[in-house]
Amino acid sequence: MKKQIKILIIEDNEDISDNLVSFVSPFAETEQAFDGTLGLLEAQRNIYDLIILDIMLPGQSGYDVLKKLREDKISIPILMLTAKDQLNDKVHGFELGADDYLTKPFHGEELVMRIKALLKRGGSLNDDSMLTFENISINISSREVTIDEQVVDLNGKEFDLLVYLIQNNNTILTKEQIFERIWDFDSDTSITVIEVYMSNLRKKLHKYIDKDLIKTIRNVGYIFQGEK
Image (cartoon, rainbow, N blue to C red; front, side):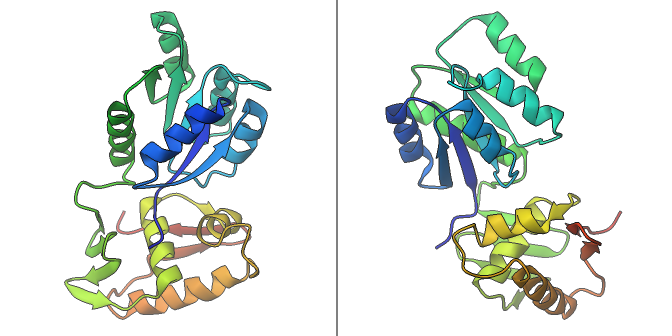
């Protein structure tokens, strides 16, 4: 089953990074970057639900990465990791736009608790694996979609696409973002496949909803919107 949550880990210590992967892999897909410069480039793809960001990094510091992402209007929740336990360091991180802080060494249970709290706050994770939007209900675990309690027949990628759109409702998503999130760079298919899947998804939703929730932003991408 394809996991819906994607987390980017920017940590230069490979052992710590691998431990972080083991902690979050039960509920999320992960990508690793081992220096600030590469981490920033990966984060700027803006396809992740959360970023775990170390402070002391080669290339660029975690503060630099955080500052640049917020300047770029990338609002992905960011959990900072640091070996420092000074109040001033934490204040500086929060001032730059960090969402939470965790000091090394830490317990895996606390890390997971903080991550899940940030994901729930952002709407990417629900306690019961349910995602809802107006009269649409999605069970992430069983991959079932219902509208007014009627089951909607969606294939794998259509399901993934609907989840991603709802998790980012009222946010413009570029075709590149959607393609990287749903198909990834390793796919042999073309980015034009998005138009086919969007058309199919629209038709299936229209059977149950008498309005167009998926709106095309010409030459940019799409936005999922309900009632104003």
